[in-house]
Image (cartoon, rainbow, N blue to C red):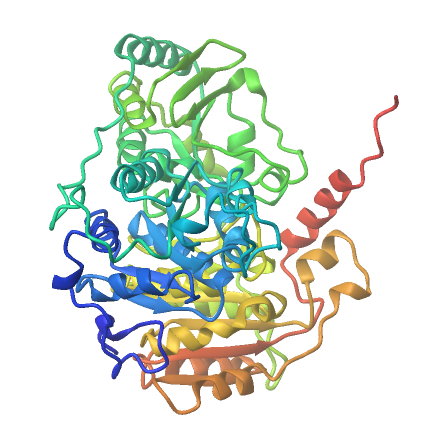
Length: 589
């Protein structure tokens, strides 16, 4: 694998030398920003060069603890920062003014929806051009330069325009700290003429970064714990359901403490998969309404009390608003608020502290778990294939299940992979990521790049549909360049299958590509990359054996050719219900 420090935005990272040495950038804005990124845990920054950010990139390259990962386009750089933040807790990307900023905007919006702190840095106009009535390139032809920041205001929690050195230190540190505190993206624009200029506010080594932890209102916390314990201890068969906001609350450990203490059956919402330990003895599966994993919805929906920890209830996670959940039976724990039934609600009560306190007050109750064991029937195995029979998707995922371990991570693309990957049982420490709230097709390619760069101790297994891949395919190039060894299963069924099941039409059929031929052309003999086309189970067995054996140190791209109508039963049910929700007529006036 290439040395990380050699991976840069230039064509041949192993031979190009940084334009700025670390010593010459001491006490400058550029060095301060680079050191701050390192201090908060970022060691890889995803970038696309442009004339407004080139000097800043020099200073990032000069930082020995940072690697600059040059991406093929800004959208993928943003998706990569998203994937990196999922593995490391924070990510960063650097683009140029407006043409780069508006290109990365979609990825930043996705990170906002998923509560990921992504620091989006934009190289901005020369500080002398602000307020001059000049028209600059890379803009929409108006002397007002605020279009870009106005676009970012709704998808970031803080915006900073750094066009003078007097308050640059404060602006940068405030933006970074806000991203970490709010767990949302921030936007930082830095004038192109400022990164290399020394200024007294920038020490040679920035003061160590520290964020004071959030602390609950103690009286509110105690009241919330008492009221919740009283509510749940009266229940006969209560359950716990984990949701996606466990991540932003950093409450996974406290969740397990609660589960161990109370003995309740544990389920996970689809968007929370990977945040709840599936090896826990009380884990019963994914709660997703009508398309839950086997026997899970029966236990959750028949409970007389349920505690939802960090949920997001939207049209997708509720299967078209069809969950059979009653508000009066629910305790909803959000990152800083607890609501019991139809009331009361306790604010400024933080999730981790609340769960830890509640664990000490709940009585042991295993009734729901015992009921689950009574009704549970193990899932059947796919029907045995005939010789040379075309491969079926359910057979593919049977093999993917056997590939999983604590040294792997799964990335599921928007599409039928959502539903098939949801049925995978994750071993202890196996990573799992998908983008359910925003649901942007193509997210998975950049996210695989970023996650694999951050979690180099894991081998990423990405399940990507052909339609999604066509959106962002280029950064396979960057994966090869970085020496990554992910396994990508490209599921070729000829179109946007998830949309077919919501509402079909000719627009859901796409032009077929020679996907392995494309990846081979991108590879072009540089780096380690191996491809295979698979049509049968025997070919799949051979391909997986090669990917996990002789080619285990290579990026492995395996194209799976399946019938266009070969979908999971969960997608068929979900698509029907979401279609029904989408097609509701207007309310009478």
